[in-house]
Length: 322
Length: 260
Image (tube, rainbow over all chains, first blue to last red):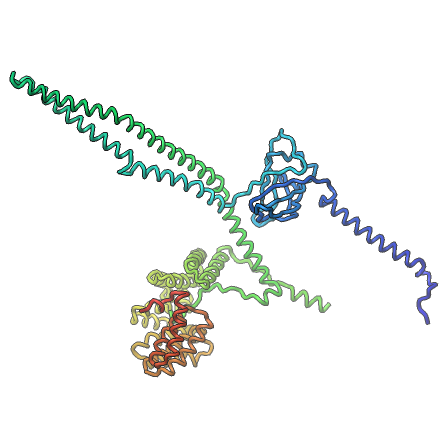
C-alpha cells in the first residue's frame, strides 16, 4: 500500500513552503548579522588616522581605540614600513573625531596586568580644531620599568662621566688649576721673604754708620728691585690665573648644575615609578595565588586528576652518597 | 541515563577542602622549596624552606617545621655551608615533639655531614638514626649505604656485604641508593684487587646514575672507572672513561673534577 500520495494535502505547495522557510531563515540570519555589525559599529561612518611607532609589539589589527576609556574605533592595519618602523592605521568613528586634536597622542595601554592591549588617545588642546580624515597622530610609547631604568641610565651616565672628568681635571697635579695655585703660592712665599729682608734692613738702619750707608742703600735698592720684579710677575700672571680659575669654576658649576638636573630627572622618574611598584608586586602576588588556585582547581577535575600527581610537601631524603 | 550518570561521575571534582591560610602558606613554601631544590636553585630553596619553617612554627606544626628544617639543611649543604646545615639540624633528633621518623632522618643527615671529617661522630649519629628508625625502617638503604661508606677504608669486606645487602636484598630501594651500593661494591672490589668485578659493578652503577642524570655522581663514577681501567691495564676502557670524564667536567665542575 502506498503510504504517501502526491495528492496528499500535506504536499500541496510544498516547494513554496520550503522556499518560504529557507528564505525566512536566511533573512533571520542576515538580520542577526546586521544587528551584530551595527552593534560592533561596522555601519558607522569612520575616519582614518595614522601614526608611526618604533615597535609593533602588542599591536594587532582589530584592537580597540579608546578615548577616556570608551571605545571609539579599531586598529585597521599594522604594517612594517621601509624605515623598519611600524605604520598603524586607525579607523575612528566620525562622531568622536571632534575630540581628537592635532596635539593628541596615541598610547599603547594594557587593560590590567593580563588584559588586552588597546590604543588610548589622550591629550589635545580643548580649543584646537579637530584633526581631519587621514591625519597623523604622535605615538608615545608607554615605558615599562625596564625602559624607565634604561632611560635613567642613559641620562645619568654622561652626567656622571662629565662630573668625573671635571673632578679629574681639578685634581690633576699637572693640570692648569693645581699648577697655577702652586705658582701663586711660590710667588707669595718669595714676596714674604723679600718683605722680611726689607723689614730687617729698616730695623738696622739706625745702627748704620756713615760709611755703611751707600752699601746699605745698594742692598735696599736691590731688594726693592727684586720685590718690584716679583710684584710685576704677579701682576702679569694673576689675570691669567684668575681667568683659568674662572673657567674651571664655570666648568665645575656646569657639571654641578647638570648633576642637579639629572638628580631632578631621576627623582621625577622614581616618583613616577615608585608608586607603581607596590601595586605591581601585590598584583603579581595575587596573580600567582590566583594561578595556583586555578591550577589546584583544575588538577582536581577530571581528566586532569588522572594525569597529575599532587606535589609533595615534604623535604627530599638526602642520598647517602653526599 | 546511564551515560549521563557516568558523565557526571567522570566530570565531578573532589570537594575542595579549605585549609587555614598559614598552613596553605607553609605548604606552598614547602613545595616551592622542593621545586627549587630539584632545579638546583639552592639559594631559592633555602629561602622557601625558611619561609615554610617560620609558617609551620607560627601554627605549632612540629612535623611541618621538622620537614622544613631537613630541607633547609640540605639546601645549606649544597651551597657549601656545612656548618649552617649542622646548626639547623642540631637538637632535632633529640626533640621528642618531632615525629620519630623525622628525628631519624635528622640524625641520618647529621651523620652524612659528619662523615666527611669525623668518622666517629658519623658512626654515633648513624647509630642514633638506626635507633630512631622504627622497623620497617624507611631509611634502611640509606643507613646501610652510609655504614658501608664509613666502613670502606678500614673494613672493605664488611662494607661490601652491607652494600650487597642494599643492591640485592632491597629491590624497593631508591635507584640513587642502588647506584651508590654498586659503586661501593666496585670500590671494595678494587681494594681487594678484583678489578674485573669492580668494572662490571661500576658499569652497573654508571647505568643507574645515568638514569638519574646526576652529574656529581657520574663524575665520581668516571673518576673511579679511570682507576679501574688503570688497574686492568685496559687502554681502551681508560681512554673511554677519560673522554667521558673530560666531557662531563667541561660541562659542569663537579667535585670529582676538582680532585687532583
